[in-house]
Image (cartoon, rainbow, N blue to C red; front, side, top):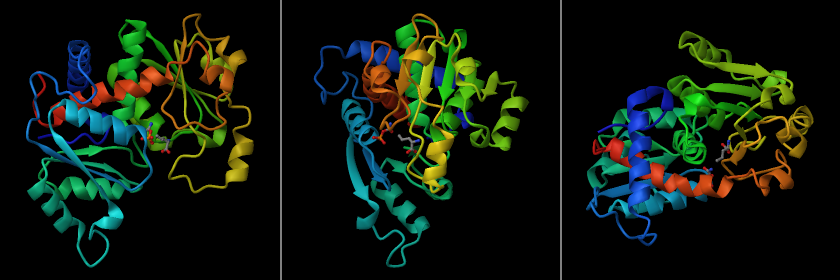
Length: 309
Ligand code: CP
Ligand code: NVA
């Protein structure tokens, strides 16, 4: 049994195994309907418990489909419906109960500490569905999408992120170090990734460059990523942040400095950080990106259950 909490803690060879498995499974089930299980029914009879403490459209639905395709069942519980945090039931007791009834626990939370506490108290795999510091399922799936479109290993591509230093970027940084790809980050001075993250990058010889000028950051990029300026856990000064990010918007002019076959990705939901023209334009692959989450998350679950082929 293995947790899937932070990409930096998963061995690179296991990340690659997950991507390979997802590719094989996606190809094999071309003729099957959405909820029909893969032929081998690898998680038949298992119950996966999902809990969302913050809104989610894509993660919730893509995991529901993924779990069904593995022949498992899922139940989604709301924090407000559990005794957790109320009525005196401790996280440790809740974790024990979840481990008694369920075979895996999938959690989206606004507390990294809660993820850590659950990981210590559960005896079933824990999957991080987004925390303030990381969004591992999203980013591993995005690597899959890039390699699928570019038909090249990610290590041979220039990746660019324009925007806030948030959970999605943290996971992208982690995987950039793991898979050794070049990552340019275009962000305002006061919104750089924290020092401890960049020290980790340095220690692990990452190829990550931070630039204030977004044209320099996007030059010759094969892939341009962005995300909302305000993440779900963002409690900062909104007016100031909007002002600070006014020159960090992706538009067609910026995309002109990227490579001719470059693509645009966004995990969604979106805000004003990208123009409508780019978001709906011919370089955008955001819908394929969203759909691929189903395929990669299936292989993430199989990894957690020690069932990767
Ligand atoms: N990208 C993503 O995680 O979307 P949701 O918040 O809708 O799950
Ligand atoms: N950074 C965003 C990602 C949403 C999927 C957030 O945390 O809200």
